[in-house]
Structures are given as structure tokens and as C-alpha cells.
Length: 139
Image 1 (tube, rainbow, N blue to C red):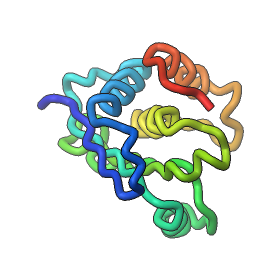
Image 2: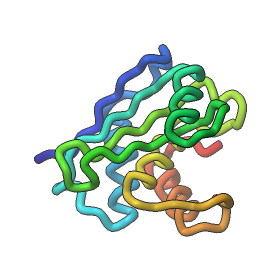
Image 3: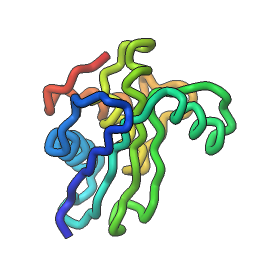
């Protein structure tokens, strides 16, 4: 099985190529110690605010839009690792880059969490390192 990332652009963002998303996720997974050679596929869905708002309400019981959600499907070594859902329009509100959100979502799929406070966590440190290594824009 060869690791890959599919990008589904339902938001008309047109700014994230599958190759770039694959590099971002590969670097994030490796930074957390996972062997991507044994991993299945990840999909990144770029969606409008209304869609991520509905997903946030349905799966987290939070009645507002958010920037990124991650959904594990088969887990890191299954055929379909999971899906990262990003709302590019949300970037305008919190100044986070879409690539940063993809990395954040990948780290969640890798099993990381940050609780209520992101800054100062191991996840925040790894995310910054991945962004630096890949040259991704950090908000």
C-alpha cells in the first residue's frame, strides 16, 4: 500500500494540490513517529463554512463553524486512514493557513490531541516543526 492524500475541493479554493497535501501529511505523520510506508489513504475535503458548521454540530454538538475537523476511518494502518475537513473561508477569520490546518488535522489522525489549550502542548511544538520543515504558511 502506498500512502497518498486525495483532495476534494467543494469550496472552490483551488489552492491545495494532492501532492502538496501528501507532503504535509507525510511530514506530520513521520514527526509523530508513524511509518507512512505502511499507511493507507487520507482525504482532505475543502468545504464551505455551512458544511463544516453542520458537521461540527452533528459530531461535536457545537453550533458554530470551525476551521478543521478530523475523522478517523480505518486508523493509521487501515486502507483509509481518515478524512481531514477544512473550511478555507474560516482562514479569513482566524488567520490560520489552509496548509497549517491540514497539518493540524493530520496530527489528530496520528492520535495527538491538545485539549482546550493548544499553545504549549507537544502537538503545538510538532505542528510548528512540520510547518517549518515543509515551508507551510503558519497563521
